[in-house]
Amino acid sequence: MMNTLNEKQNAALQTRSRLIDAALTVLQTQGAQHLTLDMVARQAAVSKGGLLHHFPSKDALIQATARHLYESFAECVQQHYDADPATPGRWLRAYIHATFEPFDVPFETLYGLFVYGRDSIDLQTLIQEDYARWQSRLVNDGIDPVKAAVIRMVCDSFWSERVTNIPQDIPPETLQAYLLDMLN
Image (cartoon, rainbow, N blue to C red):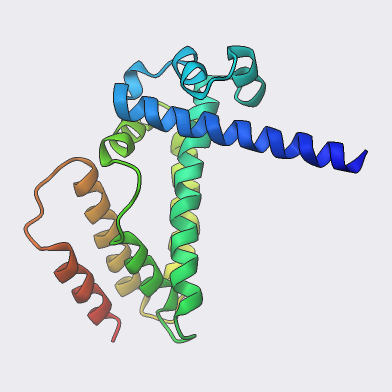
């Protein structure tokens, strides 16, 4: 009986993952304004009823997709954090390294999520909660809190400029090295 329950849970997690991957594909190819539940269900080879079982609305699917991206970034930061010596600035160094790593989601897709989030209170709340979690870690990292906030803002600006295709005057590796040097 327990094995059957675990198999059902695993199948449900796999279906959710396929639906999120499908949503990312649709976002990338069609944009957030054209994303529909029907398109995502077709892309994932899941019935619309199956999709609605996991995500009762388009907003719920978009939020889960955004959460998935945030968790992917957090995992990357955690890997850098775990590999870094336990000295002041450890979270900041990990955040900087993760910020400048290649990301497997096209920036156009991220931009579509940001545009969609502008009109979604639930997605705005998710973004604000993620920001608050990072801000708390980074300003309590044993570094001057103002310096920590400035470094986070530069990293976030780097992301937003990439997402919106703003040409960057400073090569990413130069900016990354400068931010890491600020911690010394």
